[in-house]
Image: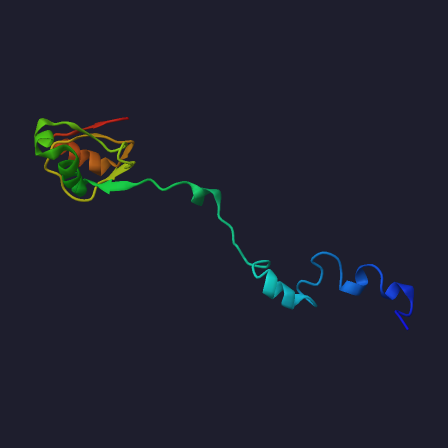
Length: 126
C-alpha cells in the first residue's frame, strides 16, 4: 500500500505549507521554541528621540568644577574655563556663583548669563 492518490505525498501540502506558513496556527510550537522573537512588538522611536541629549551643568556647580580644572591660582587669575572640551554643552541658571569665570560654552540660559556677568565673568562663544 502507499499514498493512495499521487497528490497526497507531493508538493508542499504534505508538510503543512511552504516557508513560515502556519507559524501562528499549526506550527505554533515550533515558533515558540525556535523563533521566540518572531512576533515581538518592538515599538516605534521617532527621529527626534534619537538626537543626543546635551550635557548640562548649573551655575552653582561651576565653582567646584573650576577649582578642579584650574586650581585656586587659575581662578584668581581669571583664566577661561572651556566647557565644550569637557563635553558640557549648556549652562543652566540654578545656584549662585561668586567667582569671576570666563566660560567657553555653546549654549547658556539668560539667567545663568546674568549671574556669571554679575560675578565679574564673561561668556566666550566657541
